[in-house]
Every structure is written in C-alpha cells, then in structure tokens.
Image (tube, rainbow, N blue to C red; front, top):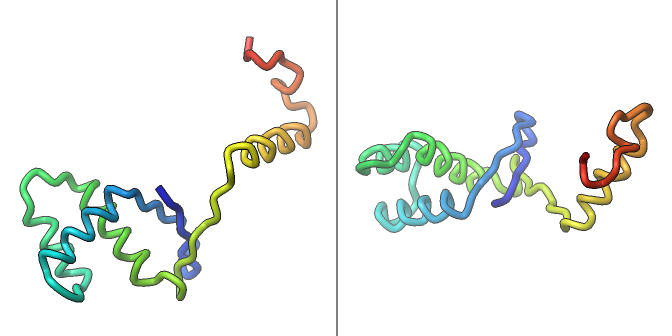
Length: 106
C-alpha cells in the first residue's frame, strides 16, 4: 500500500497492490492507452466487482495519470522512525493524560 498527495486538491490518495493489479488487468484487456471512461466501463462490466474495488482501481489510475505532475508519493517511514515520531509528539503535548501510564496501557 502506498500513499500519494494530489497537489491540486490536497487529497491524500491510497493505492493498494490489489487496486494496481486490477488496473493492470484492465490495461491488458483494453490493449493500449485507456481513458478514465474506458477503464470505468470495463470495471463496471465485470461480474461481482464491488463499487469500492472499482473506486480503488480508478484512484490508482488517477495517481498514474498525475504522477510527477500533480501527484507525488508520500514518503513512508520505517516502523522505528514512526514510533519515535509518535513518542516525541506525546512528550511535546502538555498534560497528556496517558503519558505517565505504564507502557502496558493498564
């Protein structure tokens, strides 16, 4: 799973590997460059594909189309870095109720 920022709208877009794979299947089926409408038509014509999966594949298409221009990838932190950022944030909040609790959460 990867996250992207649409610099025009400020929206954060999430693209899963499954959505990317579904989009690749559509490209193979259409055989060549495809418009958003062609991709949507192809996806809605498939049996038993829920709307949320269609939306996810269309979002993957929007990311591909705008990548480098209006869409940029959001850098991913390593787990250790993300944990440290969270710990630093908690320490910076005055009177944070759970800051003094034991680490087990009890």
